[in-house]
Image (cartoon, rainbow, N blue to C red; front, side, top):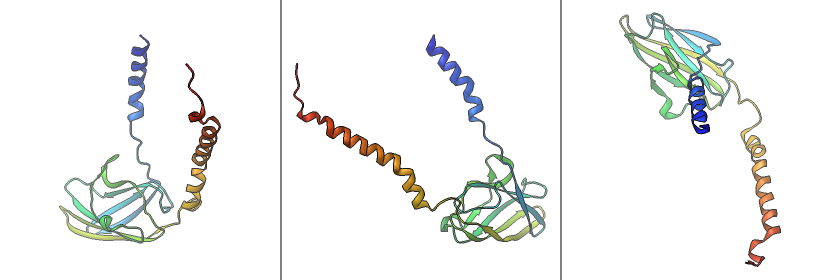
Length: 173
């Protein structure tokens, strides 16, 4: 009976836990890509290096019947991320976007949109998107501080093992 109750509680609470969080846009920029006005939304502002955020791209009139690409240029863009097809944002289905994306280096970035749709071909660039430095202490210091509990645990286990030294104790029956 207890096992059945535990399983029932797990299933009852799993639904809310599996619900996705909506994308909250806290800052928006506008880009004119030929005949299309594109609203670029950011879930975090100001943008900092190595900090995850959501990007949304919404052309006027919606994304139905349109296709496009995004070209990213900047100091932290990897070669395989330079050119990306615009796809539906997984948590904001009425717009294109990048889900949980982090820019790896501080500096100035350019986002170039190429959009094809019923109004024709359009291209526009959001230039000078400033990404600030990484928040918090440097990564090396963060890792050093974060590894202290593990080092302490290993030292404790070594001291405890040396005190007991199980190979020296005689087995008595």
